[in-house]
Amino acid sequence: MILFREAKALHDYLNAQRKTGRSCGFVPTMGALHEGHLSLAKTCSRQNDICVVSIFINPTQFNDRKDFEKYPVTIEQDIRMLVNAGCDLLFLPPEEEIYPRGEEYTSRHFDLGYLEQLLEGKYRPGHFQGVCMVVSRLLDIVVPNRLYLGQKDYQQCLVIRRLIHLKKMDDKTELIICPTLREPDGLAMSSRNRRLNASEREHAASIYACLNDIKDKWCTAAPALLLQNAGSRLLKEGFRVDYVAVADAHDLRPVEECRDGQAVVALIAASVGEVRLIDNLQVAGN
Ligand code: AMP
Image (cartoon, rainbow, N blue to C red; front, side, top):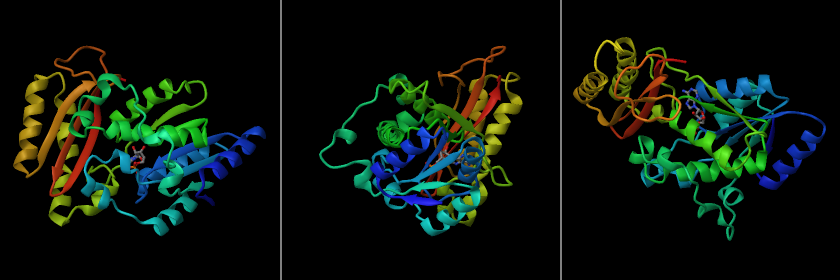
């Protein structure tokens, strides 16, 4: 695995590789890697001649400074894991390589429309602008044939699909959405799980249980009742609940009734102790 720290060096290297006809897949991450990240890297490595993974804790996407400061860093372990997963190039830039001073990368605005007003967008103001800032810059540096994202961050996948469109890269970069990897009790793997204490960790699996309950009862009870039951259960278990929602799987518009053939996703964001967790599950349709 080759390690790059400079944007231009990576860009030039990949350009030269592309000229020889080699395909490039890309997995952006913030490090503190787990099997979920590695599943993306393994798929990327299988489907492309070159698999690039980036590790960059992007300050512009944290609406909560404390969350940024406490974000786990496990770089040596990450490097070992990436070598085993078949990653060819690791991009590990310092902040000034992503946001060079004097250039306008951090003041750009991306037209995400209603997608950034609801769910994560509503509870984390500015978050998706920050995500777009970094992913836009990374896409310009790497120019991948395929971009790999996890379904775990469902709304982020739709935002990045829109970003690719805004950047007129639809013909250049294919978005591949990979399934969520989970712990044996159903908790979605996340770098933030390391911050849970033993009792919080035990409760954390309830989020997935609630999503499954909504899925099992979908169309047999009113959606509002299903959401209320899930919310009450989480509150009883000590969570602070930001949202429990069901939405159209294609555009995240709220769903108020069960309709034949509609693809529907259930989404939850809730905090236990100091750790905010998100998860989602498709409950109906393809
Ligand atoms: P992060 O480091 O949290 O920014 O995540 C980097 C990528 O890994 C994103 O595309 C995430 O959606 C994806 N990811 C995070 N957790 C999981 C998981 N449990 N299963 C699959 N992909 C994941």
